[in-house]
Image (cartoon, rainbow, N blue to C red; front, top):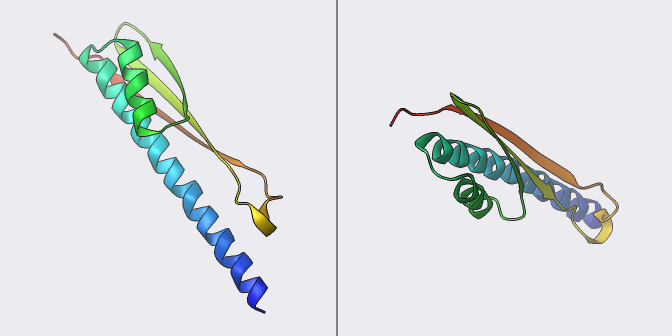
Length: 101
């Protein structure tokens, strides 16, 4: 019975980890989109997103009147008994209108 409870606890902690990664990806996309909308350079906004979500890949689309940032953050599965679980990926997109100077 105890091994089952330990495995269940580890699985629940992994689900919480995936949820937190999603929050970090969303925050990173939003911060980068805001920075680009203010007129910051793309490399600075990308660095800001990677500061909020380390290990993330960041894609930026900059049009004349809006910016779109997509952040993908891989999440590794837990080790041990649950090491066979597949990894997950948090994915978030944020869009902002370019601000007038």
